[in-house]
Amino acid sequence: MSKTASKKSFGFYVTLAAAVLSLAAGFFFLVIHGTFGLDSTHNGVCYDVRIVALLIGGAAVAILLSAINKYGLASAVTAIAPGVAICIFIHKCYWYVVDVFVGIDEKHGFDPRFMTFVGLIAAAFVIGEIAIYCRKTKAA
Image 1 (tube, rainbow, N blue to C red):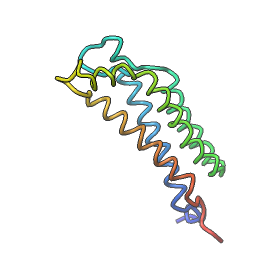
Image 2: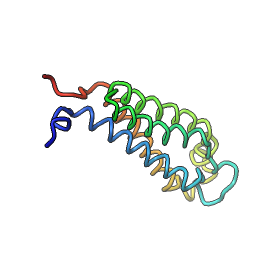
Image 3: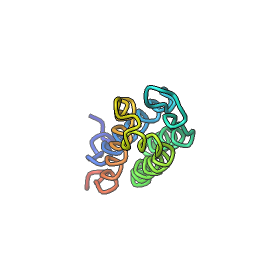
Image 4: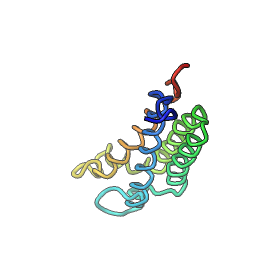
């Protein structure tokens, strides 16, 4: 094992895991184009380019910052970018969630794609928050 790899601690790998989850959530949202539910009505379309940019761009910036040994900043990006993306996503999908909860779409419930995306983005955010408080390098 190289000396550089042996200096990395648990927090470094948690930061990279958060970046990978953010990247996965961004690409998944891009592939499904933010459309949830059986019908592609206005209430089921939650796509916003800012969500994709925050998730994919945040992951790319975090990986770049990790490559230049700015681990603290990288972990902050992995927490903030998905957090802001979640806020925008909640704003965009309000009517879809209301339709499901009120019973307009009760036969179908939440789309599995919706649950998958929410799971990915929530995991990216929570792991990014954990990464902030973990040590990134081993003590000398």
